Each structure stands twice: as C-alpha cells, then as structure tokens.
Length: 274
Image 1 (cartoon, rainbow, N blue to C red):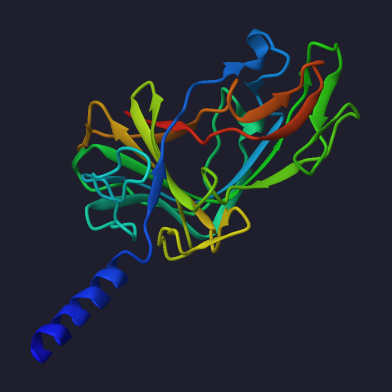
Image 2: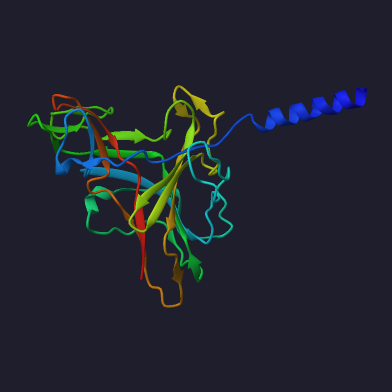
C-alpha cells in the first residue's frame, strides 16, 4: 500500500509539471476593408503607410515548418524553439538591418548584411525573422473630411505630418499570451507569425503580464506555400516582398468619423524566386 501511494504521488507531480504552461495560437477572425475603398464610421480599416520601418535579422528557406505542423486553431501548440535544421539562410545580420519599407513601395532595396545562396533543393516554408517593433505613420482622409496622422502613441491627430509611432508587437490576442498567429491567407498560401525572444524561443502562457507576452524581442514569419519551389543551379534571384499597400497601418474610426487609434497592421509578405 505504501509503494502504491508513493507511485500515485509521483505521477500526480509529473502531470502537474507537464500542464504548467502552454503555447497558445490564434487565427484570423476576418478581413478588414482598405481605407481607400471607403471608411465606415464605427469600424476599422487598413491603409498604406507613409512610414513602415522594420528591423530584419534573417531570411531563409526551409523544407519543413520550423515550428512544427501542429499549428491549426486557437489553443494549439507548436514547437517551442524555432528548429532551423531543415532551413537554409539567405540573409543574416546579427545586429539587424533597419529600413523604412514605405520609401520603396513598388520598388526594391538592397539588404545590408550577409547574403548567402540557399542550398539547392525544394522548399515549402520561407521564413523571415524581424524585430518586434514596427514604426509606422500614415495620412488618411476620414468621413469627417479631416486628414489623420499618427500622434506617436497609438492614437491619431490632424496635425501634419504627425509623429512616427513605434508599435511594439507583444501579443496577438488578449486574456493570455498568444504567441502564435496562424493561417493568415496570402496569394501564395498562408502565413504564420510567432513571437519569440532573442534565442527564438516562443513565449508561453507563463510569460504573461498586464495583457502582454513578456520577453518578446522577435517576430518570426513563416510562409506555408501552396506550391513549393526549387532552388537550382539556374536560380539567380531570391526576393522578399512586404505587403504594405492598403495593409501596413490599421485605423479605428468612431461613429462620427474621427480616427481614434492607429497602429501597425498584420505582418504579411511573399517570396519571389527567379
């Protein structure tokens, strides 16, 4: 009887440790209209930024999803630490390359860092590692006929040209730490986002305080390609396109047409291989 009691106690403690923390995922709840197609009072919309500054640390290609394939649905779990064992980096800058993407909309810019030709192979999961701060501004005419700009703190102002807002992404949803944003639709497949620390370890339900995931310094985007592509000896170009037109800034508008809040829109992008 004594042996049975000790065994039961040991099992109880083990189970308690296993369920102490969880990796929470959420997914898109619906698409917002572009502000340029009409702003509805009392709603939200997305706009093209006049500033969209990001810091890029790494880009590359993977043959398997670096956070695992169990990514569907709110509350789902994935791999805790980004697994790059099947990945081939194409660009790295350990200090980070900071650039205002809005200055080259419909154009291109050269990355400053170390560029490496990915190994030949077939890849279905391109990835990008960014800092978790997105500095944004915009100029949008609302239904009250006023032009609104960022006020520098997450609100809006009619004073031109406004103040750039350094929007820190520290949680995808509320009520707990949701460090996964899963299955956002893009033209070439879907994209998943993950909030991590410098070591690319996802934040979990234990890393939560005042409505935010604590310890977040990186945002990792992983594209799930509908049609994987191949890098061969003939490949000459690998390009990442940020999707910011009618998308990079998100606005909240009250019933009188006044823009009350302004921040960065969801991260999105695509790769081009030639």
